[in-house]
Length: 495
Image (tube, rainbow, N blue to C red; front, side, top):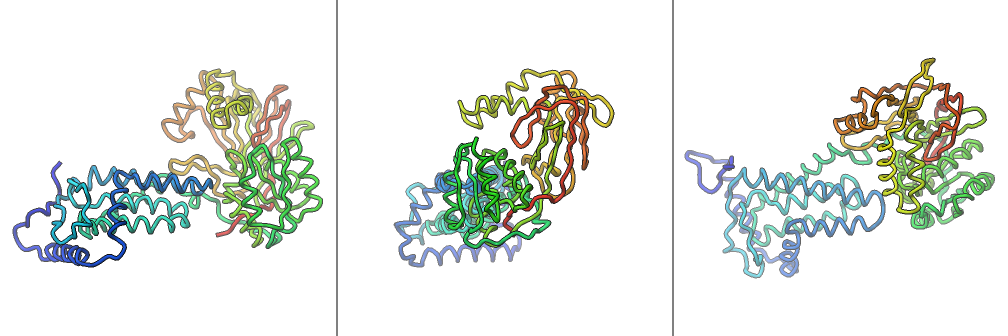
């Protein structure tokens, strides 16, 4: 591949602007070489070498992720993804599009020279691109961590001029390309701030500056110690009750009697139990994510004790919809989803293996086992007609798939049930997987969807499992699913 621009030889004719820019670039390089940089001689060359092949940024990403907060882990992953795209762009297009020799090292003191000089063309700077891409990627997900990483990235970029391996314009162009790579990654995978629902409708909730009046029940089985530790620091006057899973219901009921606000730390099933009691007592709900997926907490933009503490101290809250189902003498509510068909079988398989191998391996194994069985479809009556179904999914509010990200809700109070049906027939699992690989689920001929406020199912066989917010029960005969619009008040940090 021949370069589109060759800066090694002057072009015939007059090119005043080009010549001025190149002269200015060279002069800035000489000024930097002539200046005395206090304390830089022992540090910048080593820092520059440590950034070779992205080693420095992998180490920084590991340090950021080690803070063990979801936002920090996402920031580290986004930074590395941005770095990867920037490096790919620089090495395949950037370095091959412009031919420019490296600066002459004569004006640069020998003590600054790198032990191993680069042999690629000078424009643009790959180190500056990687530094800018990683830092911008981190900052787009977590501005606080971006501010921490930015001085290191700036020092790496400066070190390339300091050590004499790049002109200033090389570094500037590399930084621009790196930042562009970070924004390109964000277009493919939106940040949590982009996919979070708007803070509406706002609700009145008691502001508890020290947490006095908030009673938080934490499920020990969810490994809540670290999360509640942060909350203790944020809300020192809050009452924290840790208990075993079988004690959660009773502790929540006792807490609701004496609380001004009911808090819960656990997975989606534990949060569901707290929501039922909060609805019954008319209390605002404070959710601290403590499970594997934490769909409801994350859709509320609550990721850790800091987020929740800020919302409780300021009394920031929103009203959210709740889904409710009834079947004979069985009834319940759901904050996330309700499913019949293959998904309840998957939940049962996951719970069966989770204690032996952990949550995520059990999830993968459960999916493989359920898909392999290709069970006979469920038969239900929907709007007076009998349908063979492989899966019936009901979401509390509309789920969207944004770019390459999984489904998220962009509105927790839209008044709708998101109903998705995967029809039965021959090998529905294979057809569904093929459609998922090809694009959105809605492209599958086996899939249909509707937006409803109420759904009535009849003709359900006895013993049919229903999964809601990670819990599984059995129903029979008739089942009604409906919306309770804006029924629950939940603390949520506002922008």
